[in-house]
Image 1: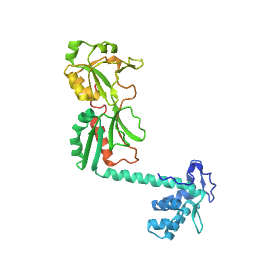
Image 2: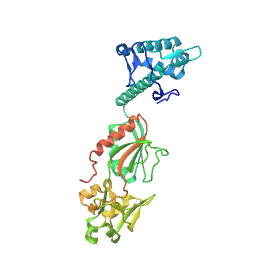
Image 3: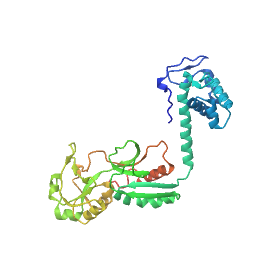
Image 4: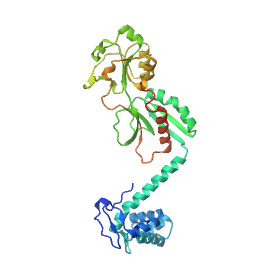
Length: 345
């Protein structure tokens, strides 16, 4: 939104209008004659008025619009006649807004912006998504919950091009080139829009073979007697936190029998009976449903972070995100479903 250097609506003194019209307590122009005549106000008249308000010159606006200065002046006069208020003081050097002009500007600019928003939205609905969309996602999530769906996405929108970059490192939306970032965990950057897809739940799990050989821990404190497989990323090894019903989160340090910065490696080791993993449902949900992994210490609600655990898509904070971005987001919202298809029920 363009901000006028002149006074805002909140700074204006309330004007006393004549000719049976006033500026009422609800900040709307009122009066019977106005109610009958406002239908004759065109978007072009509003656009000319805003331009004159900003430029404080009929001739400057006329040059920009490619019309005569007299046409701009006549249009403004017609607008003043409809409103029953003088909007500008005219002199040989400049066109100065009156108090009524300042007040009407707030509404005129808002009406033009709302109309532009409506036109943009309707045009986008009629258009076909086309062009490059750059997606960034965690490695395992991208491999298992984005890549398998891309062929169907492109079949739906043949003019889309997809660039999928996968990394478990933190991506700075302001620095790294990405149109969409699948962010998992706690959302902290308020300068970006976030479409929350759902939340993740962590599970402590091991294979039936491991349980048969080594037994089941009865409390988190017993994990130091078991073989733990720990993910270790750029910020170090994950902390294993547990929260019995109604208690505080407690960190139980575990000795890693195997640590890796690749979640797929750790999951493969767990499925092979090597040890216990602490992973979210989008990684182990299908294994738990199929019985290739079994849940441990379910009453202790394990996690690696006590903060909110969102699964979200973030994108630049624009009033009208590109049609391609909205199409991709809407597609994944559709295929992931509610509840998210990988959740353990």
